[in-house]
Structure formats: structure tokens, C-alpha cells
Image (cartoon, rainbow, N blue to C red; front, side, top):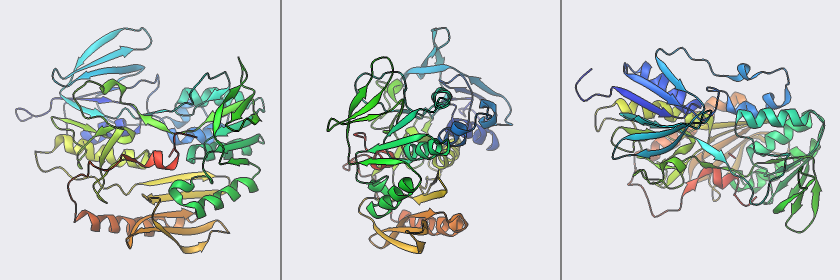
Amino acid sequence: MVENRLRHVTVVGTSIAGLTAAQSLRSQGFEGGITLFGDEPIGTYQRPALSKRFLTDDSLEVADIRMRWDVPDLIFELNVRATHFDLTQRQLTLCDQATGRTYNHSVDGLIIASGATARKLPGDTPSGVYTLRTMEDALNLRQDLKHKPRVAIVGAGFVGSEVASSCRSLGLDVTMIEASSSPMGRVLGERVGLTLAGLHSDNGTRLRLGAGVAGFTGSERVTGVRLAQGEVIPADVVIVGVGSRPATDWLEGSGLPVNDGVLCGRDLSIGNRIVAAGDVARWPSSRDGSYIRVEHWDNAIRQAKIAAATLLAPPGTATRFSETSMFWSDQYDCKLQLIGHPNPDDEISIAEGSLEERRCVVVYRNAGRMTAALLMSSPHRLRTYREEVLAAYSGSAKHDTAPRTDLEPASLHEVVQPTSTRF
């Protein structure tokens, strides 16, 4: 190793972004030490499965969705939570959650991949009310669903919609409550949102649209969801899917820029041998320079590879990150695949197929340029449209400008599912 090169990299977060970053460091020739700290007691697993097959298949064990890796000399410190980072001292403070012991860890290179945490509704939360973000959440919810409860889901974003589909496949009574006028209409457009409303209704999920939530009924155990208008939706189990927030509490007062995520450059660098990747990273879009944050599995993997390369690259040679990620969602008999990043003011057209038949390709454009494509039960067209969206974004990258810090935070996650009611 050359003098002043990295000798050790600390990764905060053991989900897919953290693990992929560690793998990428090794594949790119890094021979120093790598230590990963994760606040869950298990290693990396397929988080998207939590709202789908893991929730409905009792035969699936934790080991069945755990990620495998064949990377030499990785040190995992599990069930350990990062509580503070001091940039000046380059010191990470950690808490062993099993023993309560607090200790410090010196940092050379740092990859911030701490992800996000589920938002909760204000007020008291009785037993039987769940968020779905961690393995523990899914295990507890799966156990409760065995008793054939009446289920209410607060929030009709992707996770809420997937949980509704999973619960209906178990034959459960399901009501989904959404503050907007259609499921996912705020990001996919009202026309698509109404089509998805029909998908839920045709599969037996009751929808309460345009309905705010005031709280829950029941003291020790939930008995219902109280709407803002006063009506109570009876429920024995409630799943709250009102989005998530970046896990940056441990970075407050650290000296790093934090605002709805960790603010990065286009190469995901925060400077001084520190990078970020995954749900926690917020970086300037190639579209208009506004800062965006994306909570997708595909995005986390791609960002982690760029972040690792940036950490190892000589100054001024790092690769910029292109945000043309893809997200998928299985709902009933319909597969949704979203490529790119639609905005509420985008023009929508049906490029192929029919919305009424729920088998089509929806294209989003802004100022004549393609921004996204939604494939509905059309997976055979994925490669074609991914290439088209990538080409559109690559074209705009040639005209990159400085980051527009005057714009409001543009977290795609928050656009899809407002906090008043996940992407």
C-alpha cells in the first residue's frame, strides 16, 4: 500500500448498501481492514421480501432470505448501534445493545449506510399496531396474522399496497386507509393511481381514500383506527406504512452536513475519506441539481459500488452516480416496475398496452425528456425502457450545473407517501 492510502474502512450499516460497499472494496483491490456495524442482531437479508413472501409463508426461515457473501476478512459487529460521530477526532461512538456497553472506534475511511427508520403516527400505540421495516417487525406481524385478524393498513404506498396484497392472499379482511385520492397517485399520477385503486378493489381490499387518521382505539390491544372525521375502522391488527426517515440521529453535531439525509457530492463523497450510500444518502440530481434521496434496493446496491470506488479513487477521478434506479412491487397478480424518477408535473402517456387491462407501459416526460417508465405486468420490456431512461438521463448529465441548494428537499420516498397519512 502507498503511504497515506486507506488502511481501514468502517461501514455503519449492514443492510444491502453496507454489505455491497464492503464487497466492492475487496473486488476493487482494497486489502486493508473492513469492519461493519449493524444495529440488528442478524446480518444482511432481503428486506423487500418482508412485505411479500416472508410475510405469507410460514415455512420461510430467517436463513432463507439472509444474504450470502464470499468476501475475505470482513468483521461484522451486530446488534451494535452507532450513537455519535466526531469528525474532528474521527471517532465513532457505539452502543452494544445486548449489554448496554458504550465504546469508541477510531475511523480512517467511513461509509455511511445506516439506512432509514419507519415513521410512526403520533400518540399512544397499543399492542397490535406495527410498522414493517426490520426482520423483528416481520416476524412479530407474521405471528399475529396466524390468528386471522381484521387488518387495517394506514398508507397506500408501495409497502402498504404489498402488505394488503399479502394479507388478502391469506384470506384476511383488509381495509387500506390513504389520505390522498388514490394509491401512489402523488408519484405515479392520478390516472395510474385510480387504476391501482381498481386493482385493490377487485381483489377484495376495501379502500378509504382521502381519509386522515386521528389515532387508534383500544387500550392494551388495538381495536380499530379512528379517522379524522370520527369514524372508527374496526381492526385487530394495524400496519402503519407512512414512510420512513433517514437514520441520521447519530450524526447530529458530528460536523457532517445533515438535512433529510447526509448531503453528498455527485460521487457520493462527503469529503475527507467519507462517503454515503443507500437510503441515508442525499445527492444532487443530474436532472436539475436539486438534492434527492431514494429508498430503493436497486439504488442502494448501485450507490454502494460507486461509494466504494469514490473512497478508493485518487482526488478528482471519482465517478458520478446516475440515479436511474429501478423499483419493483408485486401486488396481487400485477407486477409493477418503475424505472427512473417521475415528478408530479410530468406528462404521462401510455406507450404500450392498456391501463384498463393493467398490462401496459406508462412513460413520464418533462419538457419533452423521458424521466421515468412504469411497466405494469410487462417485465419483458424492462431492458428496453431501462436503456431509454438511462439514455435520457445521460443526455441531461452533459449539462450538469452546480447543485441547486435553493430547492426544497426532493426525497422521492416522501413524494410517494406523505407523512400525513414507502417507496
